[in-house]
Structure formats: structure tokens, C-alpha cells
Image (cartoon, rainbow, N blue to C red; front, side, top):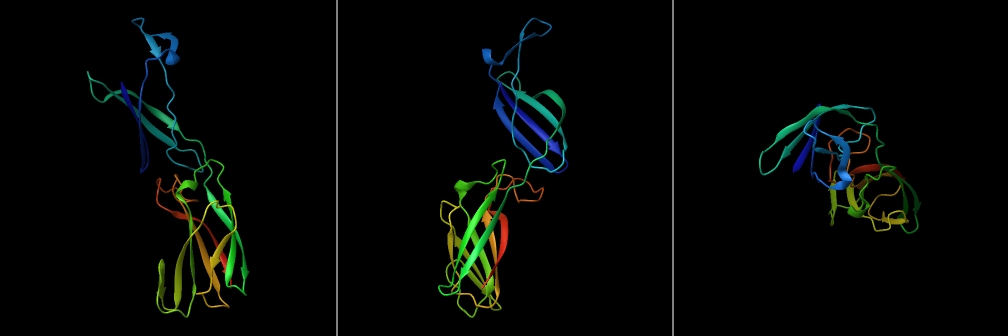
Length: 203
């Protein structure tokens, strides 16, 4: 039989589907009133990270060839707390070569950051350049430049600062993908890149 577990709390909702196997490993020592064996499986899933416990209304429905969406359980669950992922960075600027050496540090005890999806930084600072290049925009003398980082991401990354004006700070936003949405907020799960850290480069 196919089962669907649906949990709802406020505006947040999650659904997960699985198949219940009537295998020996799921058989318990209990029987129902007709003497039939009772089978039990544990449903596990990460629906959302939260800093405080939240109660969810849970409904378990079943479907098979003989019936569809029969409600077999209604109740409540309470989520535990989780730790949001983040990335911090330190950078040193080499004025002679107009480059910055960026070193990233990950804070992700529950493995939410999707390293396989890659990372990039967005640099924002003053410029005298007037024509934007690839992955760049220029507005009112401010250059926004995207630089894709290379694996392994904990190694030193070299950032080209030659198009920025010296004597001003450059904002460096670090983007990555987290399976739990934006770090530090209760946003719904996102698979799009989000800001996981920021720092300033003094150039």
C-alpha cells in the first residue's frame, strides 16, 4: 500500500510519500482484534529548520487498488530545533596584483548546504568602468560582479578586483544552495542559491 504523510503548521506544509512493506522486519509482536499481525514503520523526513519547537498537525492517508486516500491516522507532532547553515569568509587584499585571497569556513552541523551545487560570490563596489562585461552590471558608478568559485571550496579563492576603484570598500556576498532555505530565517525550503555569508573587502 502507498502512504502519504502530510504535516501542516501555520503557512508551512510538507508532504512525503512512501510504500509500507509487509515484511518481517516491520512486523511487531502485537496483533489487532482479528488476530492479524501489526506492522510498523518509522517515517523520517526533514521538513523545515526552526529555532523553537513547533507543533504540526499530521494526517496519514493510504491508497491501494481497493481504496484511495483513506485517512488512517490523524494527530500531532512537535518538531525539534535545528541549526541554520552559514558560510563565513576571511580575505586578504594584494594591492600590487589587484586580487583578493578569499578563504571560506562552513558552519553546517546538520549538513544542509549543498556543496555539489557550487558557490559564487557577488562583489559590489565603486568603479570607473562604463561598459559591463559578462556576469556584470554597472549603475551610477557601482559595479556588481559575479565570480564563480572553484572546488574544493575550503581552499583559497582568488578574486579579481582590477575593475574596482581603489580606496573604497567592496561588499562580498557569498551565495550557495541550502536545502533548508535562507540561513537565519524561517523561509520555506529553497533549492535556489541564497546568501549564506557576507564580508567587506577593503580595497
